[in-house]
Image (cartoon, rainbow, N blue to C red; front, side, top):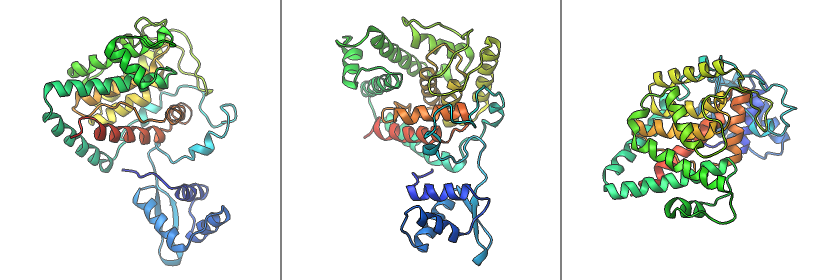
Length: 352
């Protein structure tokens, strides 16, 4: 599983990325010019670490050794994310502005066997712990996860309820003063949708357009949002990307997503695909990201993996990850965040 890179390792990757292949002496000069104080031994250690992570390769022998970026999955290419977002949406000229069906051809094998193995071990441990809990404790723990997911998922969408306010609302059925009624409805809908998928995991071993619309309906109930597949164009704040505007094409894209997820063998990748692709398709007038998060959890739970609460996710990083999918078909940041949230969930729910 990929480790968090240091700032110096990020600089190394960025420098190598600007060249086809480069010797370590040139990397060392570049780092020192940027203000880094390091020895050749330290640089070699960093290079070896980047090779071990599969980010770069070593070519040649002896004094002719050069370093180059590894060939990567087309949706997971290395990217200097901080530099990308220093520019405004109008300055990011390389950004895609329109939906491209070709993304479905590339959206396969987004996790390697080496990445999935430790996640599967965590899932095995989660299942073993779950068996030691009484039905009452299982219910209480899932209630905690549902409250925390309802809060965080709503917060990402601008809801101002605190976690404690959310607990009061969802456990005591008491709205907190100083908040709009719509905020309470959003949270109640989240909990209703989460409880639905947790109680009926067999419904999500395969997904369909009807099942996705059903989840969206639960999340949007009593909110002033059109139900079902949208028939009008929508814009997205923070990006020049414009999703499909033709209802028949939107339906086609959703069907393609369902087919892709259903034939993908591993639950982790199934969940990740809907987290990435449903917001990209934007099938609904609003609530696309909310629906993708609940659907991702539905798929995880259907295959006995721990659902995610997203409790510790950084909202800004999450929104950047979504924009990178829109503009560059780049899923690398979303994959990093997804793995982090899976680790967090396995460590914090149903713990002994």
